[in-house]
Amino acid sequence: MDTGFSFSPTPVSFELDTLPPVDMILLSNDSVVFYTCETTLLDVSTNSFRNLLPFPFPTHHGDGSINPSERILTLPEIPSSELEIMLLAIHNVPRNNNSPSLFDVNIITRAIDRLPEYGIPPDTRITPTSQIYHLMLSCAPLYPLEIYALAAQYEIHSLAVTVSSHALSLELSEVSVELSRRMGAIYLLWLFQLHMGRTERLKVLLTAEVGLHNPTAECSFTNQKTLKRMWNLAVAKLLFVIKPDTTTALIRDTVMEHTSELTCPDCLNLRDKQLNMVITEWSVTRRTIGDS
Image (cartoon, rainbow, N blue to C red; front, side, top):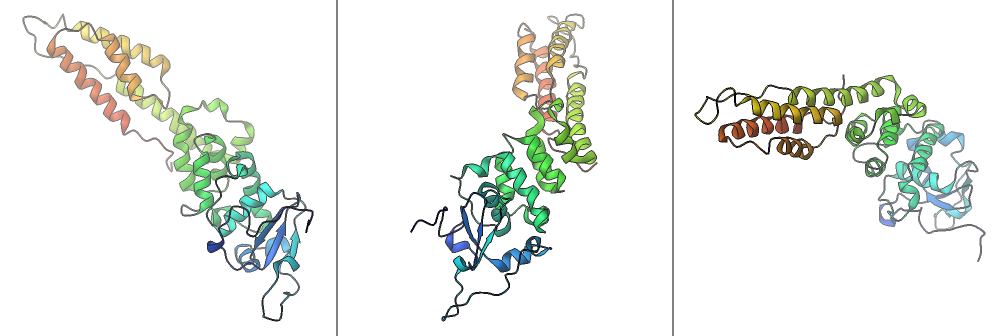
C-alpha cells in the first residue's frame, strides 16, 4: 500500500543485527521513515529529546510486542539527510557508504549542530571509536578546515589534532569568518602556530651552514666556496616556495638540480650529508597541532 512516504525496514544506513530494539519511528520533514529505539534516545539526551519523549504510553499487543508504526514522532524541522547522520551518531552502527549525505560536509555540520538542541552533547557521541568520528575523518582530506572547525567547536580534541595535518596544504587566508568563529581563539591560534612553526623550522634547517672538508690537491678551501654558492642558490629558490606541507622530494630535487655540476667527491659527500640532515629533521617535524 502506498503510504505517501519513503519507508525502509531499518533506519537508513543501519544494519539490522547491530540495532537496539526498535519501538518507534522518526519521520523527517521530507517524509522519510527511520526506525529507532526510544530508550536509546532518552539515554543519550539530557532534555528528553527536546522534550518530545517519552511517548505517553507504549502500544502493546497481545504478545507484549510494540508496533513501531503506531508510535511515530514527526520532526518537521529536520530533513532526512541530517536525521540520518544524527541517528548514526546516536546509535553508532555501521554506516551505508552509498548514502551521499554522509560525505556532504555541509549536511554533516548541520546535523551535528542539531544534536545539542535535542540534548545530545556532540563530544559524547563523537569519540575515536565511533562511526561518526571515522566518517568525519574520511571527509577531512577534502574538507580539512570545515572538519577541523567542527571538531574545535565541540572540543573533540583528538579529532582536531588528526585533522589539522590535512590543513597543511591550505592557505590560512582560506579560513573564513564563520570557520574562525567555530574554531574559537585557542584552536585558531594552534592552527596558525602549526603553519608558522613548520615554515620557520624548515627555514632554519635549510639555512644551516654547509661544512668544509680538508683541502685536497683537487679541491682547496677556495674551491669549496662553489659548494656553498650552489647550496645557497638552492636554498634561495626554496625560500620563495616554502609552505607548511613542502615535500622532501621538492627539497631534494631543488638541491640536486643546483649542485649537479659538483665533481669533487668530498664536496658531494658534504652536500649529501647536509641534505639528508635537512630531510630527516623535516620528516620528523610535528605535523599536527599541539596543546600550547
